Amino acid sequence: MARIPQQMISSFSKLQVLKKMECGLSADALSLIKELLCLEHLNHITLTFESSRAVEFLLKFPKLLSVTQSLSIRSCKSPAVNVLHLAHMEHLQELKIDSSNLEELKIDYAEEVPKVLQSGFCSVHAVGISFCTVKDLTWLVFAPNLKKIVIMECHAMEEIISAEKLSGEVSEIMGRPNLVSAVFTRLA
View 1: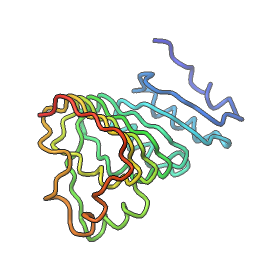
View 2: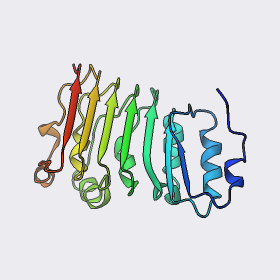
View 3: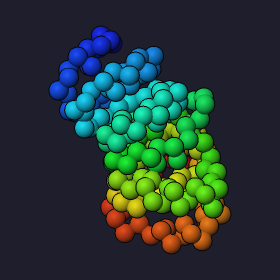
């Protein structure tokens, strides 16, 4: 696999759009994030990460969170990915998670739900989850503009949305009037 030399991306000082999907980012993910921080004109990024650590590192930089429009996470086994941390990516439109462990949704309803409802996942319109170890995808209720869901080969899944995990504050957003397409194959 060909690699982009370090410091090459940051040398494009006028770069506005970077789409680096499914390129096998692992060890170089942290250095890529550092390079992206140097780009003043960057307004759209699409990335793939192969480690929870790289995702957590990305989440530390509001500048990058505000321009990330598509994110793919794959092969993240340990530690598990906490999807709710991605809720702070205000312009995230597309999220794909493949062959990864996802943390079970554990929410302090008094504190976290109001925060997530204000900003979380508002722009997300497409979610794909495949070959993941997850019991449910209750966090999808926080994506009011979700139009497409694809869930494949999640054998540990017990239910898509767990009514037990939702409180009264969240139950009012359960309707999905914008959902256009849902594909579920080989669950549990």
